[in-house]
Image (cartoon, rainbow, N blue to C red):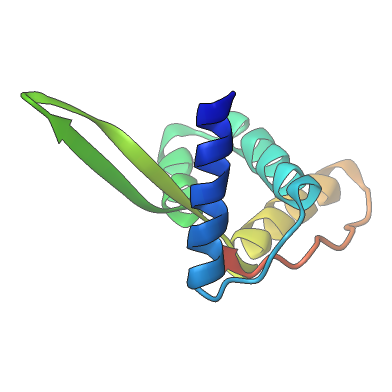
Length: 109
């Protein structure tokens, strides 16, 4: 539990230093949930393009001769929402439903 608290402090410190706006956990969860649904319904080439939109940076750490993922930074900005909104609108057009507005998240975490 202490380790998680330390990680949370590190994240908070990083976010406060980079000038990013704070966003709520439910807004992040909603965006990622929508994005996962889109990924699940996508063909391999589209999947690759969508991941490039979502992922800002991946850092790798090397310990001895082993490499592992250290961090993955996600982009939750207007470009991601545009992709989500357009894809969801296309799906609703096929089903005959209306589009709804998405929350505006303009931040890199």
